[in-house]
Image 1 (cartoon, rainbow, N blue to C red):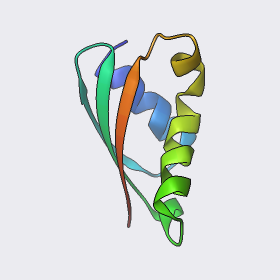
Image 2: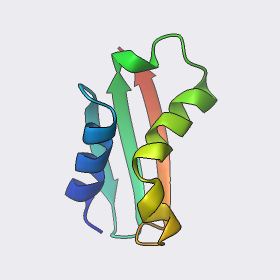
Image 3: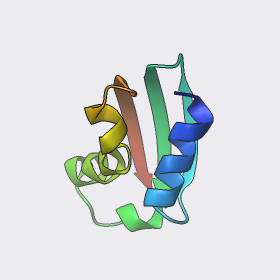
Length: 72
């Protein structure tokens, strides 16, 4: 899986978000900034991002995703 694909999945799942993804093909780090995170707990923000790539995680196409999620 490529960083651009992970970025696209997150952007589609969290419309209007600003996303930066780095990684090596299986392990990725994502910085996600979104107004949709306002008022959410850190765990809720993490789950929102993880939900955007859940099928890829379950199929092990994506092995690991470290997330930093910030509200606008």
